[in-house]
Image 1 (cartoon, rainbow, N blue to C red):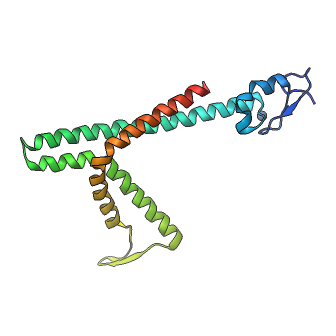
Image 2: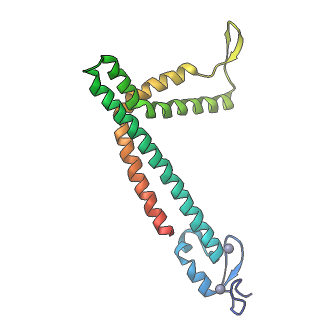
Image 3: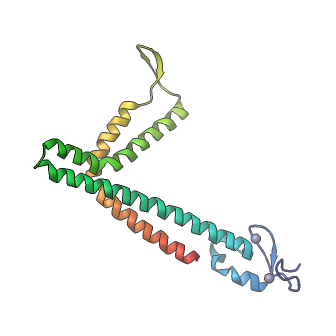
Length: 179
Ligand SMILES: [Zn+2]
Ligand SMILES: [Zn+2]
């Protein structure tokens, strides 16, 4: 067998991904992933590196978006709370709502997803209403999660923002490794 990239060279290994035969030099080029993935040909190696890069880039984007969006709402909330003393106590309530809203929405979504999974496994619940029989979509559970999410969000949002930023930094490092 000869190397798929160098027809004049004897193959010493086979790519675990595509099965191509490769020479010692080609195998050396992909040595960085040898322990994790086994022997790769240069093409498959580049593919893995590229998809790894894209994966971390997407993760980083998600974390940065979460951090920035929740930070903006949090700051707006703090401003509203500060204005409550001057304008009206209602502003304070609005402020807390804004401070916790990003967290509350994610809890609400989580509740909705869990309820859908539960229904898929055990069958949906139906309730009799004045207009007929309707599927119980767990509205009250979602509302409860939303309200609890706001209360918790006021406290945990700063921690989450730091976690997202640190995570995004780590993703950036992984992207650099792939470059
Ligand atoms: Zn290959
Ligand atoms: Zn070769």
